Image (cartoon, rainbow, N blue to C red; front, side, top):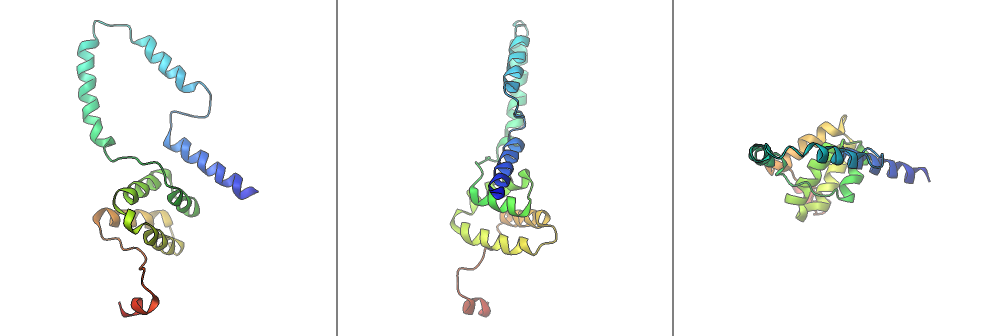
Length: 151
């Protein structure tokens, strides 16, 4: 019952954070587009502005370059469990999809172990994401307890 509503609320909040232009009011985004269309008519200046816009567009592309993948349900669940903000959740999601697919299960198990004991799970996760970027993060070992004791 209530956990379903909480989950639905969390998903709605995540979507709101990922798509800031949409605030739940129908037609809000359309109005902005219509306003832009109404401002477009000064055609004489367009060629110059077009080039400037292209410069700005190309300079802003590298910032958008890190691909933003759709949130994986496993990542969403981890973020919901430990109250991780949308930005960090997206960072974790992207690095896991781009670099950690082969160790997905072990990585998630290890993250749950680490974060459940962390005083501030978000700060700890941020460190672990940086470790993943550097390639120094090690997920939970697949091996049994005897092998782990030897390590």
